[in-house]
Image 1: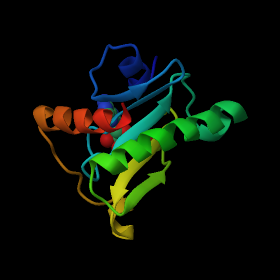
Image 2: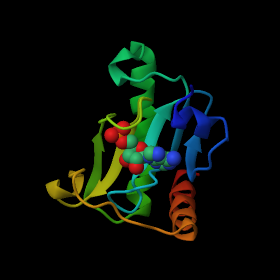
Image 3: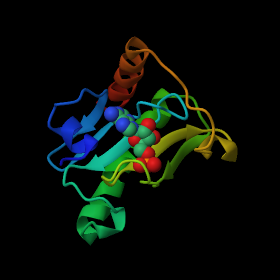
Image 4: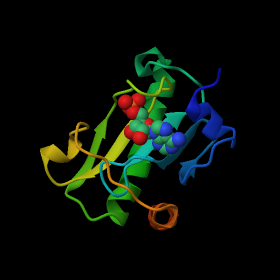
Length: 131
Ligand code: AMP
């Protein structure tokens, strides 16, 4: 069965897209730790990020860098925190999180809630910075 992220790639499940090319997709996390919390995934479905072939992993990080710099321009923050967890969704992904303090990377904290309209606006503001 395809992962939920493969279903997003296929367009079966909606997402707020930030950036995409033939190999990677970036979209807003649906349960964000911070405004602008973005996920970056390879389109190739692989559970564990360290099982990605070296070049694909390297290119994923470079793609995440470009996206992260756009997030940083769109969302006021000290910097972009980058982390990999992968305990919930078995499809490799990088979290990009606007942060101001170490506690902003605490995944045990309650998640934020934004309306679909708010998420659309956030995604658009990041896309604008990337174009
Ligand atoms: P983890 O696998 O522990 O790194 O967490 C998976 C992340 O994916 C969580 O932050 C979820 O909020 C996020 N997530 C799960 N389903 C979706 C979805 N349909 N769209 C966007 N983000 C999602």
